[in-house]
Length: 425
Image (cartoon, rainbow, N blue to C red; front, side, top):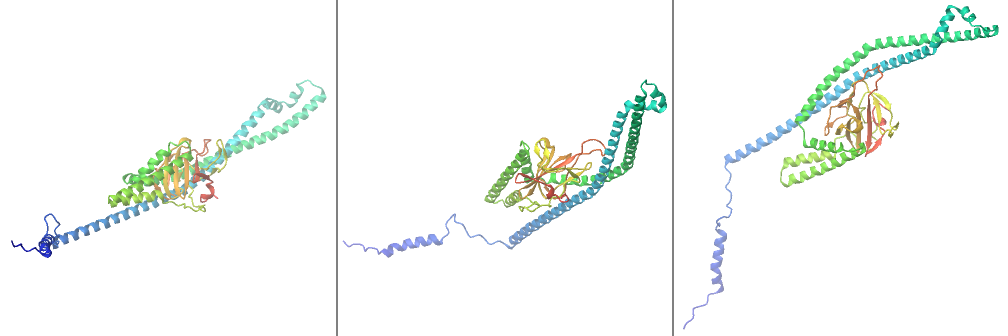
């Protein structure tokens, strides 16, 4: 029987090659088809959308720039108003000092007058009798002639001393009257200075109220974080512990902001990532006027019009003073000593109303003794911007004079603030 011829290997591979070619060249069901070309209408619509987005971005940037410029203008207006008010406060301080000096002079004269009158009181009956009946008074007491002569000599010496005392008494009375007259003359001047101060203070209060309304409407996450840090610091037992708590909270918020940046970038949320980056930068490097250099002396603005009452290092009940105190005129305005951020603004322990400024470079300025606070934690401030007011007091009275306590700390350690404050040495 004849065998069929064996197929060659090439003949066997040929159908397989045809099959593979058909698979490769024929689009399979479910495979991606080439996208159709966009039409002219679609291209124009996409271009219009892109142009609208760019215009919106430019408009938003323009609004932000305008808002920032307006905020800076308002900040400068508040600083200028505070400077104008300081001129009035200086006049008030001078008038109050004169009134105080005159009142003290009058009180001293009255005290001397009372002391001399008290010393002479037991002798008044004898003085009166001698002036009316000198001979009879001497003869009324039986005594030897020698003793009578001695008594005359004693009375002569007493008379001369009484004449000196009477002259001093008249001078003391004249001093008291002169002081009272001078106080009466100074009173209208002080009233006029106080009225001028009140007028300028009212204008500044209006600017502050406007600023507070704007800040409430634009409160940011950074402000909320700062307020959390301040609340944590308020639980500290000492000022140093409060500063340490503020620094710990600042670092924690910085780490939280960095985590937000990473999360937003992973989720491709560009706006959230940028906002978190800005918050992280603000926490790490606050816009402050004191850098890391150690020669920043004279770069702090004097927070209040006043004179040194207690120097740094002066003895106190709790040891040497960690800060300095400056007496102020009535209702004096307190301004920011540096550009930076307010880390704390609230009552604290025995300090009363307390402000802590983060001035950058590890420097913090602490102010206490205020009657009213016009700022809050997290608020960015420029040097000279108003932050609160001092208590009122009566010039010429005997009440205690209010004083602003100023403490400067570098990396938590107290530093004498006087050389750092402009105009104080």
